[in-house]
Every structure is written in structure tokens, then in C-alpha cells.
Length: 359
Image (cartoon, rainbow, N blue to C red; front, side):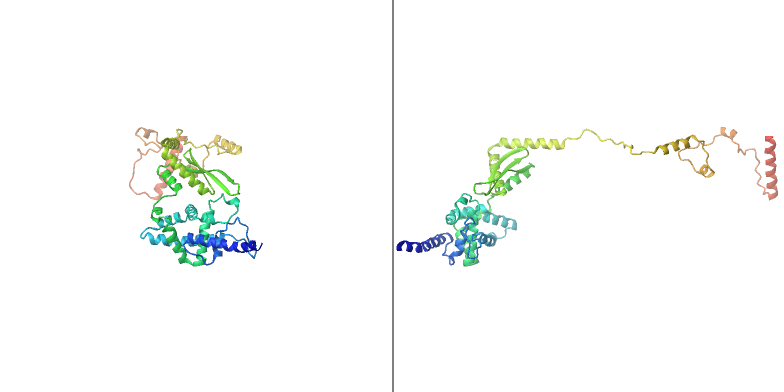
């Protein structure tokens, strides 16, 4: 019985010693404060709480490690590729810190074997390994500082596992490659969400499908929409390489679409304006009719107003002189100046003469 008690006392120290040795193989040095690394390897599915009742897991260290990892990788890429532009540096850093790369690193280094989690979440390892890797970087930062994190990434990761030059010039974004190909060929590309469900552990699972014009491509499944679209794009690109008839079908669908868009409209629009909107009241119509039937009785002001609708007057000819009441051809023109009495006498004589002719 005493031996069993001694074994129970030694068991935590034995496990702690095993963890020391395992971490020495992974990070390249012995930890100083082992509690940071224990928390970094504790998944949130393990329901443990501290003395204050707060949950203990690696989420906070994952947040810290993500920020430290971005800074360290950015520093390494900046120093390794002098003269390269910002876009190239950003793309290279994203390739190194993306979830797929971190998941593979965690698996290759044996970090997955040290993660403490419940059995029901062990199958859902799409994020667990990468998250633990980031949390481990956060633990190194708290335990040894920034320089220790830089040494870990330079000597352990980039020096032994990842070739930074090959990774920088390797295109791994299959969705971007598919989008670029479709834009160059003016192909309409869509990503349709086929299904969204949860697996046995309650984790979300998405299935997306690639559609080129109206031709269906491949489907992809992942634990996020982005991951499922990446998988679907990769499968579609491989299928396009293997099956040339699929490309022909896509371009035939594009031709049908463009012909429909460019087909002219045969019917010419009418230019006549419909004036049915002008509606006159019956009283107005009756009043205008009565006015039109009455004889024209124009005032002196109306007679002096020219009628622009009347035809232009004809010039007088020689034949018109016979009917002209104001013909002055027989009147002698006297250039001698006349007095006022002569003018009055001449007017009275003319008036008397006109009166005598009417009588």
C-alpha cells in the first residue's frame, strides 16, 4: 500500500519529466516555467478551471502566439528577401502562418501527440494542431522572451523543416488561381454553398460547389467556407487539366450567354406622342363652338393686329389699277405751296362732288 502511494506521488513528476523531454525535442531547449507549456497544450474541450473558477485552456496563449508569430515571420521574411515589394512579403508571410502550414508543422513535430483534449474532439483536428502551435509560441514568449521565439522559428522551423525560398515562390491559393483563370478568359465564376451542417462533435461543416458559366465544377468540404472553397477550387483545376472536354463545355456555355446578351432588338420604338392626357371639360368645348359660329366682330385693336396665319399678300400688277379706289393717276400734282384756306376749300369741293355723284 505504501508503494502505491509512492507511485501516485511520483506519477505527476514522471509525467512532467516526460513533458520536459518532449518539449526539448520540439522547441530545442528546456522550458523554465512548465505551466505555460501545459496550458498551451490544453484544448478548450477539457473542462478545467483555476482556483478562481475561470476556465483554463490555450485560447489566450493562442491569441498571443498569433500576434508574436506574425511579427517574427514578418521580420524573417523582410530580412531574407531584400528588395522585394510589400505584396510579395505579405503573400510569403501568409503562406507560412496560414492554418494548413501550422497544422502540418504541429503534426510533423509531434505537437499533436501532446495536446490534451476530450475524445469526442480528437477527430476534428482541422484547427487543433495549428492552434496549439500558436499557443506554444505564446508560451515560449512568456517563458523566454522574443529572442527565444525568433531562435525557435529560425533554427527549428525554417532551418530544419520549411524551405522558405520554395514556399515563397509556390502558389498554394487555388481559389485565387481559379479566379485569375476565369477573369483572363472572361468566364463567369460562382461559389455556391451546397450544404451546411454539423458533425458528430457539433463542429460546423461546409460544402461548396464551383460553377463556371452554367457548368458545374467540383465540390469541396471543410470546416469553414473558405476551406471548402479552396478544396473545391483545387479539385476543379485538376479536373480542367484532366478533361479538355470540360473546358469546351464551359466555353460553349459562355458563347451562348454572350450571344444572348449581344442579340439586337428588332422592334423599333414608336416616336409619336400620345396626347390623350389632354381632356377638355364639356362646358369649354360648348363655349368654343358657340364662339366659332358667331360672325367675327373685331375691334379696332384686333384689326390692327396682324394675322400670321393668313397667306402672304400678292404684289399689285398693272391689271389691278383699274379696280383700285385710290388710283391717283388722274390727279394733277401741284408742287405750289397752298394756304390753309386753299386746303379747306379743296376738301369741301371734293366732299360736295362725292355727294353729288351718289345722289
